[in-house]
Image (cartoon, rainbow over all chains, first blue to last red; front, side, top):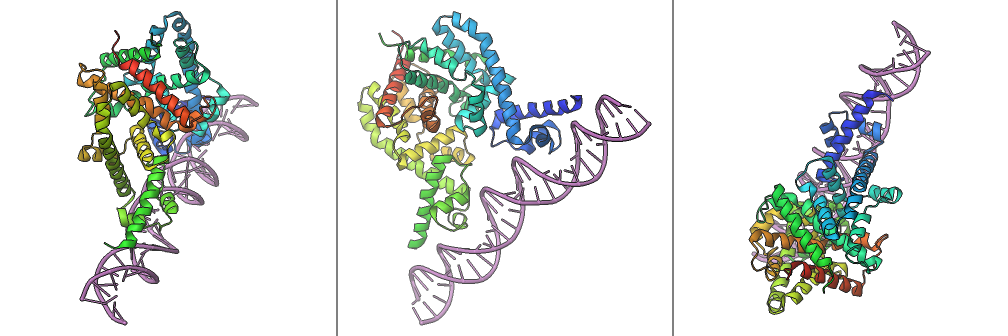
Amino acid sequence: MTRPSEITRERIMKAAVRLFAERGYEATSVRAIVAKARVNQAAINYHFAGKDGLYRDVLRAAFRALTEHQLVHAAETKAMPREQALGEFVRHQLRPLIARDELSRHIRIFNWESVRPTQIFHQLLSEEAAPFMGLAVDLVRRFLPDADRRTLAVAAVWLIGQCSVFVRNREQLTGPPVALALDESAVERLAQLLSRWAIAGLTPAP
Amino acid sequence: MTRPSEITRERIMKAAVRLFAERGYEATSVRAIVAKARVNQAAINYHFAGKDGLYRDVLRAAFRALTEHQLVHAAETKAMPREQALGEFVRHQLRPLIARDELSRHIRIFNWESVRPTQIFHQLLSEEAAPFMGLAVDLVRRFLPDADRRTLAVAAVWLIGQCSVFVRNREQLTGPPVALALDESAVERLAQLLSRWAIAGLTPAP
DNA sequence: TCCATTTTCAAACCTTCGTTCGAATTGCGA
DNA sequence: TCGCAATTCGAACGAAGGTTTGAAAATGGA
């Protein structure tokens, strides 16, 4: 293993994660990536065997990081009362609204995938067999213990969907006519609002 | 006004609405439209001054049809109890899941816009000044009469977002692992589920 | 019917995209 | 230090995109 080539790989990966998170797969050109990474045009094909290969590696990294992050929080989440656990989940989903870290970018990439799924993502989803929906399904099951598999799936999609609208449309929501000020406290209020509504929705009527 | 040219215009519009609804603006090529419409390559540029112009006309038509449709239903909706009105709203939003008519295609086009807004859409939104969010805002106001403008906007986005997830991801939801069977009765059940959850979420805790 | 205007058509143009190529350069064990 | 492999580089390729062009065809009023 030579060192300098690893540096190039790393520069490409870093730039790719940023751009894929910002614009999605199709709208990101390899020329934009190599420009941001300050590497040669052919570097992506040499190191990743093409744009597809690069995106596959980015997705793999995102999967790993996200599942790892979930495993860390899984134990403490399970110990919480379900309402608090849901609040944490919503807060986690809304994270890209304020934080500009790697985790947020990974969430944004998956958000793009939920809009226009890539063939690459689909393949990876089966082979990685990551608990992608698992966490959300487990969560709603605590509210709907007697629901069948389909209802649980619908509820999980519903829950994730509520959050991802805001993440995807961040730019639109901050402008008129909505004009949300997305600072930390506003996002916290938003998370509480969404949590309250979701809890009320999932809690069976008395 | 000559007749035959109107026929060409109409063929292009019809094909364009179908393709824009199915794949969105960017993923639809001019060549795909002219192939479906069985007209010459240059026809779009002659009649609509380019792809942008065609899309602008399609959006205008969609705006007109949708606002007209809303105006028709506005009166009876206002007469309903708010729970029933919300149910109707959700059912209307889920319409593209089963129906394959013009109205459903227009809703799908706006769904694409909510994912990746076009410059064209943005311009049109201001000049048409259509009550695009208005209906949803009015609806949630009946549940949250004392809420401020921001909360109402968030609630409206939240409500629309819950429905659009399912519309956008129709293809994914019908396949494994979710495997929803999206026939008419299933969509009706889905609409009831979403309505119940949304009503519970919007109804202030006692 | 004639002719000016409108509309259609096939072909090309120009740009952007992902990828490939071959030479030049660099890195590193022998 | 030498020599081979790994890596970088600039340039070009071919495909696909939207648009333009100029001639042919069709249209419809005088």
